Amino acid sequence: MKREEFEKLVNEALLVLPKRISQKITNTAICVERRPSEEQLKKTGLKYYGLLLGLYEGIPQTIWGKGFGGNLPDKITIFQESIEKLAGFPEEAKRTSSLLHLPSRSEGERRTNVLRTRPATRESVIRELVKNVVWHEVAHHFGFSERGIKLLQQKRDFKKGRSDN
Image (tube, rainbow, N blue to C red; front, side, top):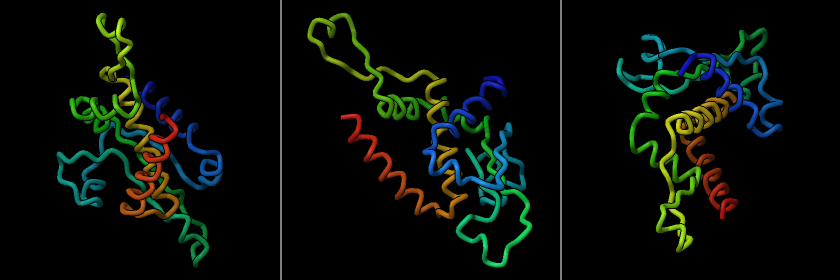
């Protein structure tokens, strides 16, 4: 995927964030990089070939105002190559297909009106991954830990599942 197309997906992911969240993202640069640097991988404890999809670097908003002033902008980096690599895994395509509820009908199923889930396209998997990674890194900006984000994600998935039924 071309860099410009990927950057557009990142911008779209920011636009679909709830307004109450997006309006509060301040002093933050959102960047796209091809892959993480060795320094970024070291910060996270990942080895060279680890898949780092995104990275938040900065001072979370929950800490601002406690002796901090004149801060440099926070930085959220989304790593294109890692997301594209993950999107190529069949398990990820299957997971994304079920999340997106993509209907598929074979010729025989048309008569019986049975719907099945069709495989997601690579582009739809990338789009969904970008949305989730942006959401995840923005949550760090607001002070959520990995554990806190996991709980938020479960709540988000539960709500999404209820609204789809």
